Image (cartoon, rainbow over all chains, first blue to last red; front, side, top):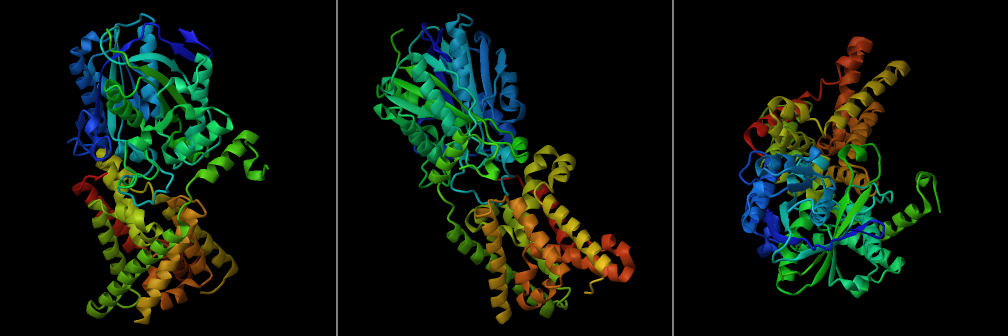
Length: 338
Length: 157
Length: 117
């Protein structure tokens, strides 16, 4: 149901019946390494090209999710997914094997929550019994497409971020044990004229703040309603900027714990990741792997996950355009009682 | 405080960019320059050693020893790129590994290796000059203009 | 001995120029290298790159600036020998060792190895 200007509340409380996360070696070596379902020791996953490896990551995550839920692809009405690749080929090619009616979306690194919000809306509207949403990213495919060949010796500035090699998928059901999706806010595109693709944190922070404030305004709540508000991949630079923007807009973020998936997934001291993690897989793997596990352990009751995306293309940057960004928020609450 | 470059942006955008600039970690320019100086210097000394070697042991002259020297440096760069080591060196050395001819070879080699996935003709062949293309194009265009100027004004060499 | 020291110092200095273009000028690597090549070409055009090589040795021939110098060298030598057509026939004369070996070795590498990521 529509709430406020750009948010939905889900009275039927769709349940996140199962999730799965599959990551690469760098993520396995990070602080959350134990919390992922599968950690690959080799980023090629034994495939011939990086693009095939990214597709394999997503296939594994989706299949694992189905297995955990005890369902086959044929029993799921819709699969909603997207990624960073041109024409979202990782999702399209993975969906070939998954045998679910497919809705492809593009939100760059905000895809995880964009997909979860749309999936929850389909469930709440009675338009499906089961919906799966998934996303993935791979460090090498992102470097190859957006920046330089992986073996090229360019020096990354301290504002750069490291694309996560990982895939995360979630399956929604009408009822069952598990955390529930209670609300979502669809973000607007915000462009503050930042042009540097090596400083995405600065480009995305305004979009995150815009969506978080819109969410609280639409639902008529304060940030303290949540035990944790987490952004997708602002990294160290974007995180610091977001804090300042909250203060500037007099938004009481200090009522809750505010963190960022890009900062959680890697150990910035030991791993050469500059400002932190980024990529569609960042928010997906941290949310479905780590945050939901914390909810299961009873450490968190209500969280707001705000995935942030930078909607540039390699060409738009070369043509001197700035970077428009977007952030989508989904509120997840501990459920449990069927 | 608008200025010419920022004419196309609103006040809010300009204010935000100032905020972002303030928070953004500054690049360690001095540290990067020292590292670039060190590594660039070492690569050039290696080049000098190679030149002496080719002159004294292989019978090249001062004029012609440059050719095998450059070929050997390029070979070393290609080997390091193939082993996945060159980019790690470059993160530390910055321009120190990018500016010498080894960086040129790295740009060709890394593009070729990466795009092998798209096949030999379209992948390797079509993408090899992805990064080095501008260097070659601008070098040649400038050489042409310099030649034209010499022709027109007859400045002797 | 002095030659080695000058090679180190001059080579290092050209790299520092490149580093400043990247860090302070905020140019991309492609822009930086193109700028350096053009500077090398102009320097040879005014006749200062050759004496530079005499005193700095590999410090002047190894950085990418010498590529610009070699292109102009070739063009101007052919210009003297063959007249105006020399400007375009001579450009690749001197640099062919560098470009040829880079292409050949890179091609072989791409056939033999996969990227490590």
